[in-house]
Length: 147
Image (cartoon, one colour):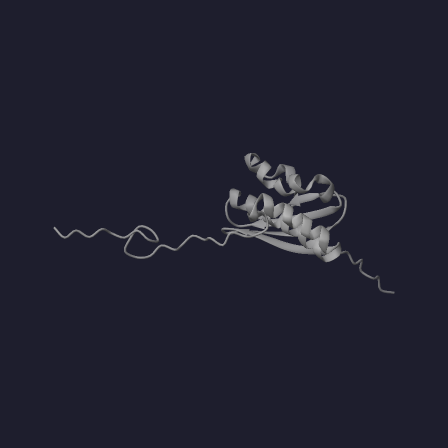
């Protein structure tokens, strides 16, 4: 007799900021939010805690209390990781509502997030331009003197 695997509904989304990438897995549960296995309240730096919790504060704790969201984040610095987590968190709740709840509730949540801050759902494509020869940086060049 082979045991049937338990099928759970989940969505996987990602958030990127500079070189940081956060992958969020959202499924129904008791409302646990974990980042790299640590509760979301213990994420460093503490100064950025309000920024990190913006999607939760905007949509309300009741929306997140039905979901278990696990986030893995790698690369970049502390601040860019916070922004990547924030993006992954907001996108995961929207994706779950689109896939397993109704389109109307997804649209309302998306409008609310976009009205507050577009970077909650849309990644920032800017990257560091590589340094070129003949100067100190990407664009700066050595000055020429004619006299």
